[in-house]
Length: 210
Image (cartoon, rainbow, N blue to C red):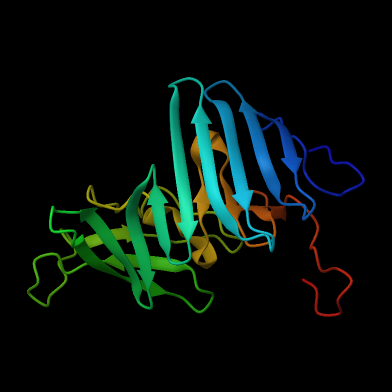
């Protein structure tokens, strides 16, 4: 994984990342990917403080472009509001009728002491009882450094919100488009497969730096 004197990741042959361009905050603004199965780019737009405002994933193989906009707790995909967070989980938006009122369901989440999302569920039939077979939206278990267990916790409801299900370890979004598979932390990206960051801590000159 070569890097320059800025101590950030610029390419990764394992993932097929051919180049990563960064802004003045060392945040990625464009990731170019070309491997055996994926070919495309992921671009990011931030505000002046480095908060992510928009992400554009372009898959050259399928000619599909997915644009995700972040407006505080509200997340839009391709111009449509998909979900918004609430203190106990998120509201899954399934549609907007002519009246303008949102349709959807409240999804509640169990998190561990690190903020990792372990279980998402919704009382879709409103009977006050959660059915493990029908109302568990998603289950997640993790290795110590964030890689998700596979092979036994494969509960993912067919009705799961495709945007909300990206948020997993530490409650952070995992970007899997084009095989990137990196957590988009606030100040840098993180690879759970190798437990390594793609750049140095931007506050390394502080005594409390991690």
